[in-house]
Amino acid sequence: MSTKHSSEQAKPASNSKAVTVIIILCFLGVMPILLWVSISDETSTYTSVTYAEPLVETAAADAGLQICSSNNYPVNVPGGQSAVLYQLAPNCMVQTAETTVQVLVIGFTSTEAQLAAIATAQDTHRNWQTTNTEAFTSGYNVFVVQGAPGNQAVQQIGASLLEQGAVRVI
Image (cartoon, one colour):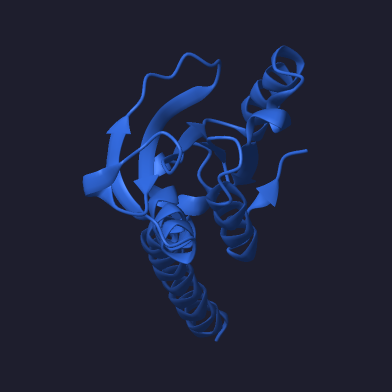
């Protein structure tokens, strides 16, 4: 009787081991997929300025401007990964210095690099606000909007960026 009883106990133990192994294998197979799906591009510490393009497009349209050009711009800032310089104007066929607005978008690798660059820029250009320039952040991107003195489109673009969730750099 004791041999019959011990063999009956062995079966449930081996069944529970098999179930445990199957659960572990399923968990190991599903876990990488769950991690890949749960990590979005916006939470990455290495975002690209291409994510900023819809914000610039919307801001330009809100200010009654067209995007006349967008070109990669060399990045000479520690922690800066890429930059794009946009030229905006009411009519791209008739661009003048008085009506053209430039939007420089710089992508950073981290919040620390972004904040350090902003602090350096503010120390270097203490009167940047008197030159009809506004700066904003969104994610790891910094937007620098500049136009000729008196060009109200700079403030209209700034208002649109704020409506879209950007934060003004003071």
